[in-house]
Amino acid sequence: MPIVNRIADLHGEIAAWRRDIHANPELMYDVHRTAASVAEKLRSFGCDDVVTGIGRTGVVGVIRGRKAGAKVIGLRADMDALPIEEATNLPYKSTVPGKMHACGHDGHTAMLLGAAKYLAETRNFAGTAVVIFQPAEEGGAGAKAMLQDGLLDRFGIEQVFGMHNYPGLPVGEFGIRCGPTMAAADYIEINLEGLGGHAARPHLGVDTILVGAQIVNQLQSIVARNVDPLQAAVVSICLFQAGSTNNVIPQHARLAGTARSLTHEVRDLLRKRVAEVVEGTAQLHGAKATLTYTTGYPVLVNEERGTAFAAEVAAEIAGKSKVNTAFPPMMGAEDFAYMLQERPGAFIYVGNGDSAGLHHPAYDFNDEAIPLGTSYWVRLTETALAG
Ligand SMILES: [Zn+2]
Ligand SMILES: [Zn+2]
Image (cartoon, protein in one colour):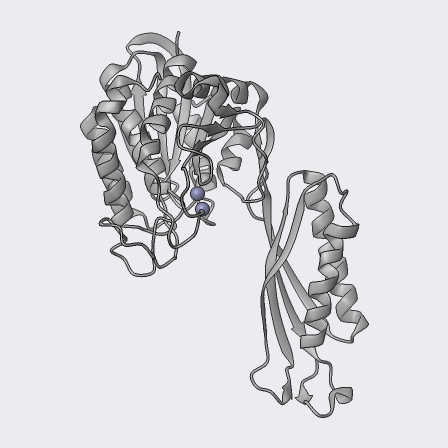
């Protein structure tokens, strides 16, 4: 199997970086230790340029091939962890209470560092590889912040590639698909005002718990009865706060949740119907509803040629039968979508084996996936920039 030999040699070193990052998780844009360590390593590898502070705490490394070539590609990893209390007994378990790398961004960062080390050592390509380490993937739109700081134009990046580990997909396998791959995720917040009062005299009040419950139910009719059954959509209310005791009808209630879709049309429909349902239902019961609908990450759309190319490279590493090119889309969101809105390219999944799921307190990135992911990055670069 053509795992790059030198990458196999680097496996232990890359795993040690990964475990160090795992033990020291940082959230959102506050990835100062991780970013400093990434920048220091990129410099020690001899990258031609290392730039920090792009998108607040993002880091970029520039590696030029030793053959002449003008093409520039961007390879992207994410560095941030999650506000979750780790529930493992790993020797490199999180040392920070309430924070952990439960999405494998420790592995993503380490694998891209490994690729940077190899690429800076060998430089067997024509053109320029730009390695991108972003903060705040978990809800902070760090990719967008890097774009707003001019990432693509500043380094002349023409194509972008991203990777995420995938629990449940065996180690040694890749998954990818062309077109919509991950969901647009928007956020719903509803503040209800009714008329509080004595629980024994409900006829004199407007019960925000009843109104809120009706809204939760009615919102479910959107996916069931407004969205084309052949299209994907999610409307989930995940928070419902009201009341403080057992004999008072509460004046206020607060609900929050998310609406997700894989196309612009469905995204617009959800937005319109959520507003109508919330307003109509509140009005029906004499309550006042204030809806705040926040636009989150866009749909992640893999571009056709970039996807075919990424799948070919993965097949070269793992074998054709180990690359599922019709991997099902999922309703999670990913801010690499912003980069794919600006440049052609593709996002691929690398198997994490039989681990706990992403964002689970027992999750751990699988170090056995390191040679696969790292080899993918270096072969991708050497092939895209073959000259
Ligand atoms: Zn995540
Ligand atoms: Zn993630």
